[in-house]
Image 1: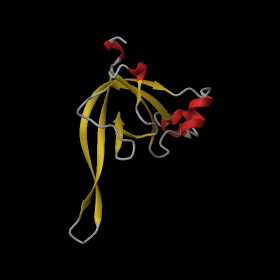
Image 2 (image 1 turned 120 degrees about the horizontal axis):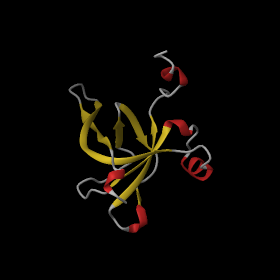
Image 3 (image 1 turned 180 degrees about the horizontal axis):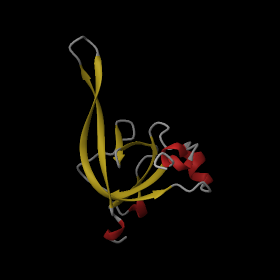
Length: 124
């Protein structure tokens, strides 16, 4: 894959439970890294991908391909991705493309219900 395909920049964030001063815990988010990626939308006719991962609405999901980093342990329970200010939840375990240990592919879904058609028509 040529490096020109990696033309989008995403932020990889992590969450951790931190003790507060009242005897409880709070969730803390921290920026772990930024990476250049290739982003594709999930096509609605990909029934196998949608049903295996549990994606109900393909318009809120993206497929991210990025270079595997040795300094990051990708974890779908404590990590999320931000792209264009939107938070994406990791739905799939990072798949090692062609078992070459240089590229991984992750399927993510936008958090919340912000992708309604009303957002697109608000500028009219």
